[in-house]
Image (cartoon, rainbow, N blue to C red; front, side):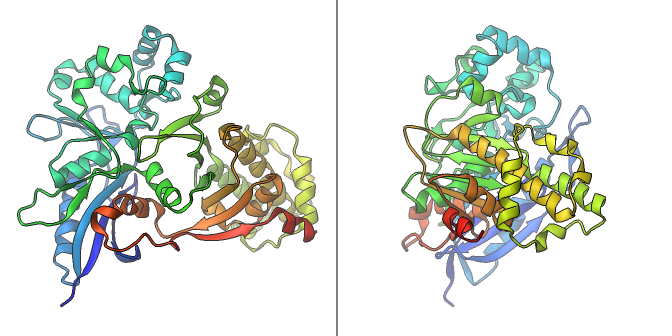
Length: 458
């Protein structure tokens, strides 16, 4: 029986833990999903059940290895960020996998900032807004301050993607996509770990840094597959675009958060950008990616439900709206307040609108203007952008896409879709290590929204 060559990708989110098998054409041929009940750390705060996650990896692999129709050629991992696994000398976890939402003692972070030029200087150099436990480097520093005996027993600190890779490869590595994700560890100006990392004794806890496209052999006896080093999920989602498009572009990944990525802007972060929730990521090759964030999907959900309740219509009434060019223009021109204050629409008196549809048009104009301003923050005069790709939930919202194309001058706007972009990115990044064929050119489905066509429809 001929076995189909496949790559296995573990895609670990905060809620869903998924395993995908992709064939050589990067079509999904198998999928398994699981959810685990959270446990609590020593303070009673909720955290990931690390042991359940570990067992799930091996259980899932045993399941797919038993399937006679597949030949596993490679395995890679992509997970949420800002999460460390601390290992002792035997490779066993020494502590819980602390939640990045765990409250952080302000005194510890402020004392650290003051030693290195103050909060603004520290955050600018590390391209990391002050986010408490979301700055994963500060999680480890907290351990050093509060629990020095536990800290001294930590042999290695691995971000979650690299821990999952370690489970299969037995190799210890650090990865730039995780280090570059608001960890407060990296000095972007110097191009190395910030001096505080060495001064406070953290540097020796981190394994060597490798690029995201490197692979290693498995430690399983008799196995022939290779193992990737793992990737931070936001950086993984960018990979299909980086591999498919050579001309400068910006990707807007939408969902609860709208995160805009400009892989072609390597300029240092400014105070203004930092204050408006911009940061720098690293792509899988270790190059900076300037990004801005908006809580766009969350605000859309809250306000669309408010509109539905006020006008006594279905909460999903907006899905059937027809595009009205004149109404679209009227609403876009009518919003003059600073749309980056997303919550400002919540103060809008809905009785000013005649129908739920009119109110929704106003909401979308507000959100689109906020998105445009967020995009403006990461644009570079040195490297103009000609293409904008929008993926995720808002890419399917015709009104949002039409309004966005209308507001952006000289930029081609596309709605982009692909199956499981994050997992796909983790597969594509090690393509040459396992796949005998060329990279497919049709993995991303694009729909063009023309600004001129919008004008003609009016």
